[in-house]
Amino acid sequence: MTKLRAILETGVQARASDWHIREGSTVVLRVDAQLVEVANFIPTREFLQEAIKEICDERVHDQFWETGDADFAHQEEGVGRFRVNLHKQRNLISLTLRHVKDQVPEIEKLGLPEVILKIAEMHRGIVLVTGTTGSGKSTTMACMLEYMNRTMARHIITVEDPIEYTFSDRNCVFEQREVGIDTLSFHQALVSSLRQDPDVIVIGEMRRRESFDTALQAADTGHMVMTTLHTTNAPQTIQRILDFYPHEEREQIRIALATNLSAIVCQRLMPRAVGKGVVPGLEIMLNTPVIRKILMEGHLNRLEQAIEGSNSEGMMSFNQCLLKLVNEGLITEQVALERASNPEALQMNLKGIFLNTDGGIIS
Image 1 (spheres, rainbow, N blue to C red):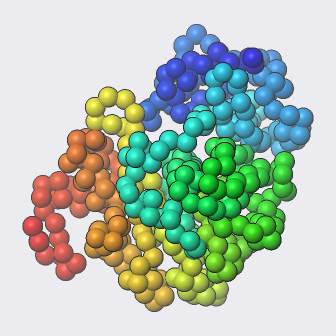
Image 2 (cartoon, rainbow, N blue to C red):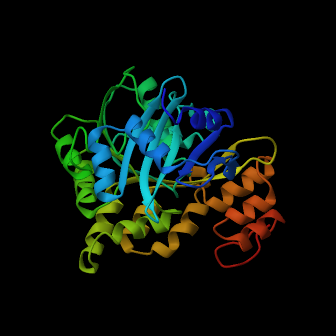
Image 3 (spheres, helix red, strand yellow):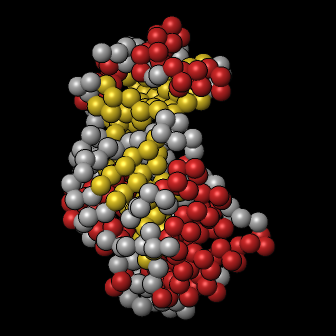
């Protein structure tokens, strides 16, 4: 039992996703995407210093006091597992914790579309799961891995900082490596994984050009690579990858992406219209011949239009997904318009007005 136990229990009972614990300030929880204060408790510096010693090892403890930042995982017995970011702000101690469920939820219970299962069944190529912090990227990726575990026989290597979901071998063989404990860096682990007979390589977050070079190499040699990026839609995701490289190399990388990309899944979480909880809104781009041609030719401004015109192949834009969620009564029109990539177009769609590629009304 640690000093943080009561705070963590309170949040779990309230169905919180995140805890913000700051020296000298009220504890704040994120519940159903909203921030909620926890009354009657303000942690002191002494309290947090003792709590930190209880929940992290000496290596992480020293790293925090030397650099002002540290990431690690904490298991509070009888309460749950948490991803922890320890940092300083205004020279005060702060912790941000994310509740990581012990059991990976099934894709159907999260409200994710069936095409996510088809992406998980792919044998090679790069799959990017993107979104802002707290958008559910890690959970969606974990669902895909657990689906593989239930239905396929694969050797899956994950590299994370820290490990979030833990997997037990069913049909798949899992090896889970934590940066700072099992390996020095994402890049080193990714390079090493190519010599470990993997079928699937999972990188918790793609941060540098060198790692993406190796991911391209892995996909090009027949492996499946899954990773996350902090981007909000498919065109932005492609541009972010190109931004890893100097201008003179971007055409070569864009062509490599056209060959090796399998899918991009962009995700946002929205509050339910009725009751508690959140609903995922998705943009899904699959590397079909049309998308591949667009990437080859460098016409990234055409990606959104191609996604919207490829529903029959399993793709959807954010606006199409939001319209579906509104029509099903899962989210309100107000929430949909607040989260839409193109609110003006969605407003027209909600009124039953749709435009074709030339700007003409089609219904």
